[in-house]
Amino acid sequence: QVQLVESGGGLVHAGRSLRLSCAASGRTFSSYIMGWFRQAPGTERESVVAISWGGGSTYSTDSLKGRFTISRENAKNTFALQMNSLKPEDPAGYYCAERTAIDPTWASWGQGTQVTVSS
Image: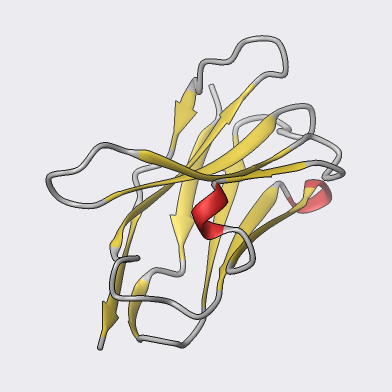
């Protein structure tokens, strides 16, 4: 079973950037699709962006395209979420997750890292 650990959350002013990282341990994750999700209090968890195992394809929520980008470094078993031009509506717990290319279920999740945006 893979373990996913997020880092990089914190407090940032609106309009600034923040980079989150997710480290995987327990096995190699290079053959898995990796994704970021977020959930604010009282709301459902929503998909932010995902990346294919080779990094050649990314899948972004339309409303976040252009501001949030994902990248991965398979050799280091890490992937990242670069968030630019943060807005007051972006604060949430951000979670990384993985799934196989065949099974659409996101099988493994990190504990989350909190992002707060001040206006």
